[in-house]
Image (cartoon, rainbow, N blue to C red; front, side, top):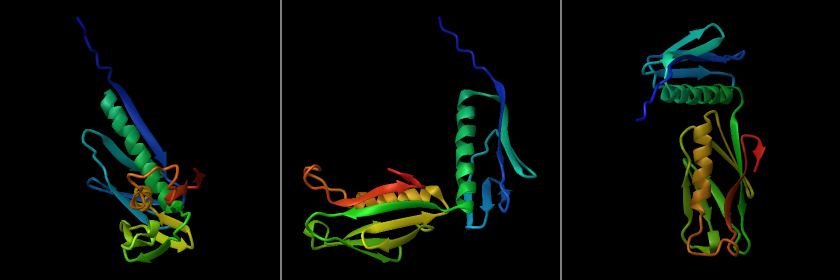
Length: 186
């Protein structure tokens, strides 16, 4: 016979609010404002205590289970990303690589148009989510945003738009690839 015993402990996390950043909670929506802009996120606070006390955000639960502890740690990471983005924008750098056919990149509205990729007549398009800024300098693309998830999704859309199928990747090495994300070289 197996018995499972759920250990319940008091588990609270706290995050320091840096200078120049304001944090507000309206129902389940957390709004963070800073020098670079503002972010907001819907938080699932079901069963959690959440309070903003001066320059600290304190949240957690009394008698926490494993699942609640995972949820609290995930929420801590999301809030830290929101605060980090309003202080300093997240930046992804991508490079357009080609061997034979020169690729031209063009930014129009919420799309990046990739022309002459592998000599194709029809241009490929990559959607850019609202809130992301794209700058194209020759073959280098810079994606910036105050929201880490939006910047990452824009970079991923650019990378997948030039994905080559049914060809050997060792021979056909053309495409757009992420070279650095959030200041870290890849």
